[in-house]
Amino acid sequence: MTTSACTVPTLADERHAAPRWPHSTVLPLGVLPTAPACVRAHVRLVLAEWNMASLADTAELVASELVTNAVLASTDADGHPLYRGGTLAMVYVRMLADHARLLLEVWDTSPAAPVPMHAEPDDENGRGLQLIDAMTDKWGWTSVDGWPGKVVWAALPAAPERPDDTAG
Image (cartoon, rainbow, N blue to C red; front, side):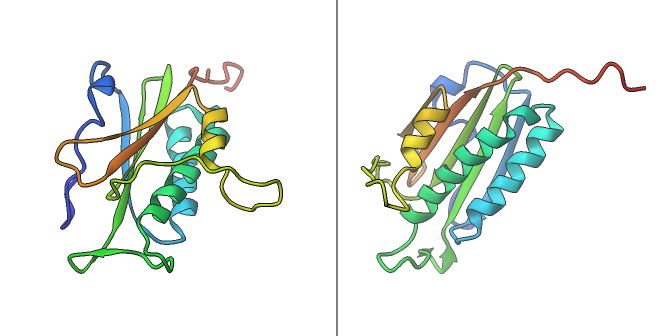
């Protein structure tokens, strides 16, 4: 997938290159406040299509938190979206699945590492990476050669859903 600003590489890094992923999708999003809601809808619909709907609630939350962080990393100090070369900054959400696991990746153009925050009990923000850590098998981030920013990823275990054998 190519945009005027950059190209999303084929794979995040060598860890993900070994298996073949029979299911994959990429969703480009502008760094706007609506991006997390868009990714939640996309995740739910794609997982239903892939017969992995039982993961939807968890995957929606994880993807939404990853995208929220990517959008925040791609805005200025006043919260306005960044423009690169006159074009709205983008984030790219990639989902990969093989019915044993689901990998969510969010690519942004900020090279800054994600930093877990310490939220106070009354704080409304600052728990995203803690939620991701609690709800996934593992997560991390990496820079990628030829990409100006980073990719933050999270892995969830999956079991294929069985079609209802009684329908008929």
